[in-house]
Image (cartoon, rainbow, N blue to C red; front, side, top):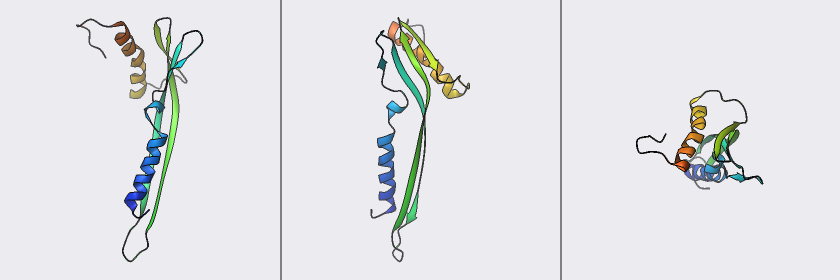
Length: 120
């Protein structure tokens, strides 16, 4: 590496490799009885980088990152019904409220809605 920018770009690229959209809403899991489970998780990550890149000082850089993936729930689709199966009871945060809305949103898109009904 020849600059701090290179060190930061390298670390960010590694983060992109580790965290993708499937870490938040995972791939559907099909069970033998026809039930579909879709994992929903919360992703938390942090990043820090620093160094020196001067003419009278030798180049030095350091960077680090941490990622935590916390499973929240599963969207369960079975016999035409959609529901949430929580890993732990929701704490009523904005994220939990958004996750609670998933079955209703999926249901409206799969069954259709009238033009007068908003889809949210």
